[in-house]
Each structure stands twice: as structure tokens, then as C-alpha cells.
Length: 220
Image (cartoon, rainbow, N blue to C red; front, side):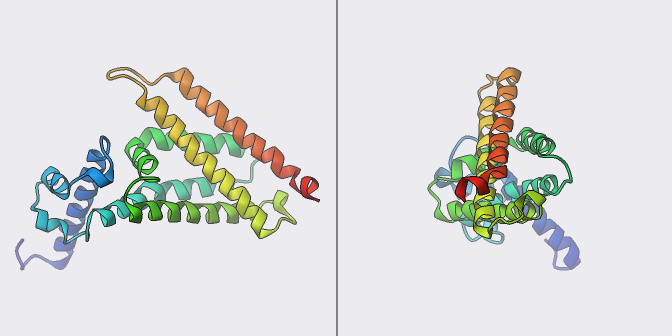
């Protein structure tokens, strides 16, 4: 790269290379875990020298952490928006499940990466996923706290409720992914199994919602 190039051009090229490394790694992780993937595999897929990797990441663990952030960032904002809707519980539940469905359809590799590495062998990535889900629960708790039905709830109970929602969303995404992965090569996704996952998710969220309305009576 010429030193006469403007700083903005060099930065743009650096960002493109960084994103190419992330994309290549995500593709390779479709068939293996992060702990079994080699750095040279990633750089070979991008077409850069292994030394170029270290201009962007200290190691594969740091790349994995960046993938965690990339994988979950857009889902945070979307779910927060649904929870902030001034709609009834049933409508919010339908919208939430639809958001998860769409996310799995549009980002299956990201969902697969999170599902595999959540309990995987790279500690930094496990911690990053746990941290992102913890932050997600904090955001959901803030949205739930603002709803009238949460009036009188302690912060601890609202947080517990938020963690239930986040856990169900993660498990629902994994269930949709299992249906998608179960389709043979050249076959379409089993639409009935897909609808069954959506129905189960809505029923589970509805059960949480019903319990929420009666929580104070149960513990008083």
C-alpha cells in the first residue's frame, strides 16, 4: 500500500480487510469450532499473509469476541424496540417470535456460532457471549420495568423475568436453527416443524406472561 494514499483510504482498506477476516472465519466456523480452527486457514481464505492478521486481532480469541459482538448487536436493538411497543402482551409475543424467526433466517451462521461457542473451548469467547447476554438481559429488564404491569416489582424480580425472556429467545433461536440444519442438501426447511417451533415459543412466552401477572399474589 502506498504511503501517499490518504489516511481515509488506508483506513477504509484496513476495515475491509478486518471484515473479510471476520467473514472468512464465520464461514469456516460453519463446520468446526473456534478452538479447532487455524489462523492460517482464515488468512488463506482471505488471501492475505498470516502476519496481516495481527494488524487487526491479537489472536483468534479476539477475533471470536468481535464475532460475538457482530452476531448479537442487531438482535439487541430489534428486541428492545418490540418490548417498547405500546401493544398488548399477545401482540408483543408474536412480534418477538417473528423477530427471532427472521434473525435465524437472515443470519444462520451467526446463530450457529453463538450456539456452538456459548459452551465452547475458548474462554474469552464464552465470557464475551455471557457478557453480551447479560447486557441483553439488562436492556430487556429496563424495557420491562417501564411497562405498567411491572409496577411494584423489585429490581431483582424484574431482572429475573428479563433473564427468563432472554433464555427463551436464545433457546428458540437454537430450535429454529436445528430445523433449518435438519433439511437435507437441496431440500427446503420443514415448514411444519418450523411452525411448531414458533407455536411452542409463543406458548412459552405466554406462560411467562401469565405468571408475570400473578407473581405478586404467588409470593405474598
